[in-house]
Image (tube, rainbow, N blue to C red; front, side, top):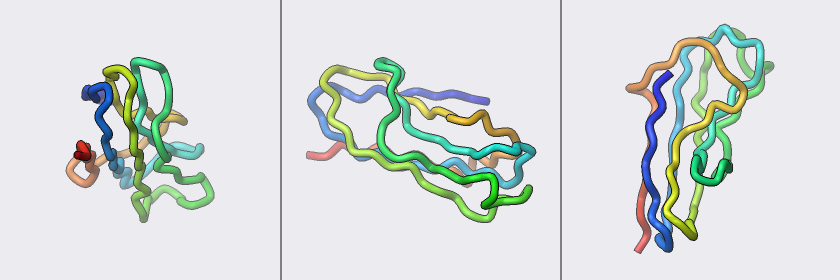
Length: 102
């Protein structure tokens, strides 16, 4: 998988929103993605979460992850796959949005 990071600057407030689109899965576990503070090794905000019993091979919805954060120091942020999902991802159907609030 591809991992990309972005920097959030200290003392500024940000709204983060995103979703990872899986169109099929070979995983028998839950799948869940979250914004992740790589600098401090900590999850940020709510997870995009789906339990095993919610799908059977084909994913029919796309949970979103959200956060509002004001870091005390500059941090590197990425996306963490919490449960190690396997299957088909379609990058053009997922999204990530970072908005700095004034």
